[in-house]
Image 1 (tube, helix red, strand yellow):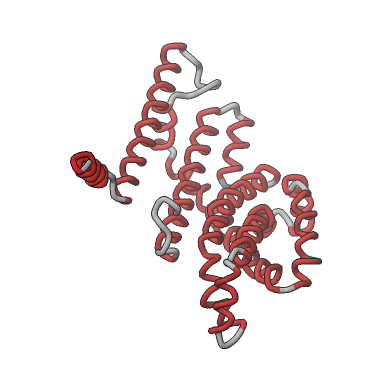
Image 2 (cartoon, rainbow, N blue to C red; image 1 turned 90 degrees about the vertical axis):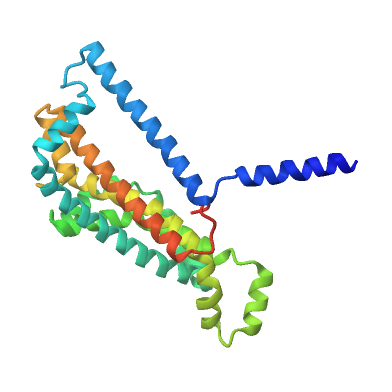
Length: 275
């Protein structure tokens, strides 16, 4: 019996020693993802060359890379307005969503009156109202920012409200017993508890804000990556369209990564696997 017990302890210690640290686990996951991505690109390149697919149907990754290098100034010029409008729409969605979620979570009026109206408003397809926004606010940057805001707003409200409402009842009773005011309880216990939910909502909202801006640029714009996609479509320039999509994807990935880093900094008590 003692021999089996010591062997079990030895195996347990060996497994723990072989377990990856959080930073090492992230590197391994990144290596797997990059490896799969490289494999997909290689398969794409080989398929285009072997099947002799014309560029107007599907350009190869090397053709897209060559086009991007050759016309980098064009894509930088059109990346900037899309990026700025996305950030503004996202920022408005974060601030407005968090503030409204606080009202919804902490007041009976918010729970009974505002929340049902928000759900009804979310049912309306945002793409369908894009032409109306152009009519009401013009075809400038303001209408595109507001479209991005309306698309990204609802996830922020829902996630923040869920976080504020998910505090354990025992913690609520204990916190209110020691807090000097309802405001102090909110700032020191309730809002920090909701921070992981808020950052999860931000990750969803940033992707939706990009979609909102691109849809608005499809409807009416003379600049931006969405405009380049439509311009390339009109000229049957598939390489331009694919390159604009690649640049747009890189922009979205960078913004998502920034939010993920911010989540690790501000929600420092959360495990790396959760962020």
